[in-house]
Length: 280
View (cartoon, rainbow, N blue to C red):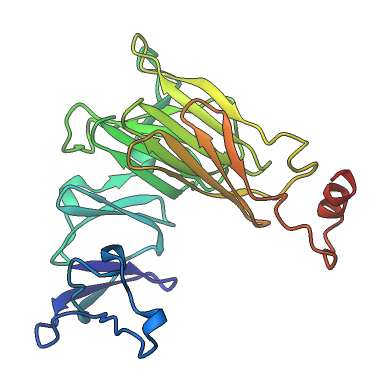
């Protein structure tokens, strides 16, 4: 089953059915020209690709509107514009007992601070990222702040959830968790990235390193970071910007590749890219 969130605050569930009347979706047919026929075994499909049919199962309206959606074990966790993080089962039922209200979650800079203060404004979560191996969620608020939500149990009982602030940045746009090295990556509005590690002694978040775009690759600002993704082995981080382009970074901050300087055509109108051409 697949769940799709809409801009209007609806959650649509689709069933996936394998169409058994057709064995494979793709079938390669050799050309009648003898010189174009396949001679290597690598050019043949070894496995069938079955066709899939998506059928709408049901639809629900999420109160407050949907800002982000992730999966947590057998449930969906949905952040809303009214400051809640709701948990839905795959049958569309709301798990009220384990849904969160940001105004009731205490936030502090580390787990040793005795005084934790809940949010007093009408803030809400815009981005979520979950890792069971880290034992919590990284969240991005609408005002640019970021935090890590932890709890005493993996069930995330609302009475035991605590927020740990990611200090040092107030223009966060997106987030992604690295389960292998226990890192939290955040994208910023200034086109940079910042990566935090968990301090095992205090439970707080400390800056591990920053992702700074070298001026030799792009002497300007390509816009806010709009997306971050770690590779499945957690050894590489992909980063994209609102102005276009992407980059790949090693786990601890070395830039492997950047696409911003790839277009060197004569019809470029971007003055920053024109500067790059002059230096080549």
